[in-house]
Length: 237
Image (cartoon, rainbow, N blue to C red; front, top):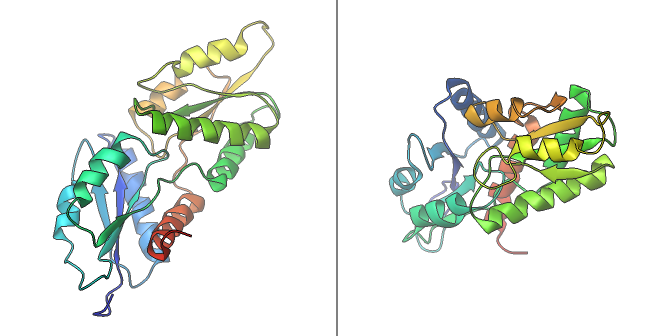
């Protein structure tokens, strides 16, 4: 910025009533701040609790001229309603505040999913159900499908999608479908959630032979947030 301040980084998560989930998100925000010294890192949410992203953005001092005051990075694995509507509304009227892409799809997340599966004891090349939170927005569904396709290529086995909430199939239905036709088939469920909470508990109760934990905390999640911030400031390639 012209006055020497670097643009703020607003890390915008969904929000959860689960205390462990809130602590996990705060841990990501703190780890991001440690990676970008000299940048003010702010915590914001689109649902459940505050600070609400619109209020956080409104409190960011305007930037002079054509400078950028802040970048909002969605701490969300797919770009659906919360990115295209909620966050977009929060920055409406603030041309000095940019919004980055969501975290996924990203090959670093695929690497993380594979690591989680291997660590959990999943059968290499075996059936996997990717379990995102779910969204009624077709753009989020497409992002999740792309991640599943990338995971299938890396894993070397079938990967289907089952949702913790919202669209069908549910995680439980996707597990049952993957297991159908043979009693010997084992099915691993790869949690595509960021933090513990009600959705993770649904994933764990869906009947998978192996179930992985949420993706955060992991340094790769932090790395993607920092990458999204820097890429937004660089502008379109």
